[in-house]
Length: 196
Image (tube, rainbow, N blue to C red; front, side):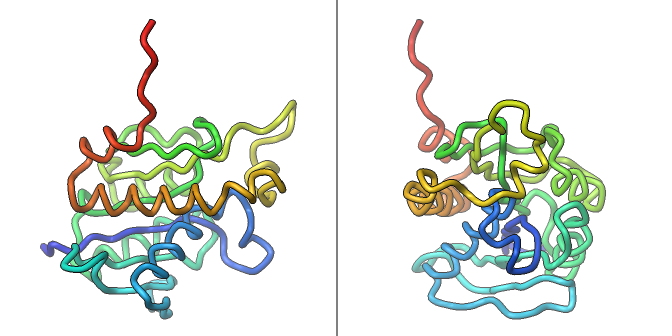
C-alpha cells in the first residue's frame, strides 16, 4: 500500500449542477487544485484527477472529482483506490452536510451516512465506513422544502458572499487533517462548546 491520500470531492457532473449546495465538495477540490497550481485531467475511472503534493513537502495526494452522479460516486472512488493502491483509511470524502450549519466545517472518521447517498455508495463499494470525511455545512432546508430540492439548488446571495471563506476553511481542514491527523484537525476546526 502507498502513503498517498485519495481526496474525493463529491458532486454531480455537468454545468447545471456546478453551483449547487450538493457540489460543495467539488468546489473545495477546485480550491485545493488552485493551491497546487495545477488542473484536473480525465481518468479512466470516470473521474477528473490531479496528482501532486499538497503544500511544500506536503503529503502526496490524488484529488478526484467523480464524473458520475452523486448516488453512484462509489464506483469511481473504489476504482481509483484500487488503481493507486490506496487503502480506505487514506480516503477522504469532502461533501455537503445538511446536519451542520452553513459556514461550518467538521471532520470525522467512519460513522453513518446521514441519508447522504454519495457516502452510502462509497461505503458500499469500499466495503467499509471507516474512511475520513470532511463535512462542509450547507444548513437545513427552510420550512417544508424537500432535502433533495434544497441540496440541488444554488447557494443564496447571502451565502455566496461567505462561500469563498467556507471553501478556504474546508481546504485548510483537508491540509491539517493530512499533515497533523484527525484529532488535531477536529480541535482546530470544530467550534468550541460553550460552557453550561
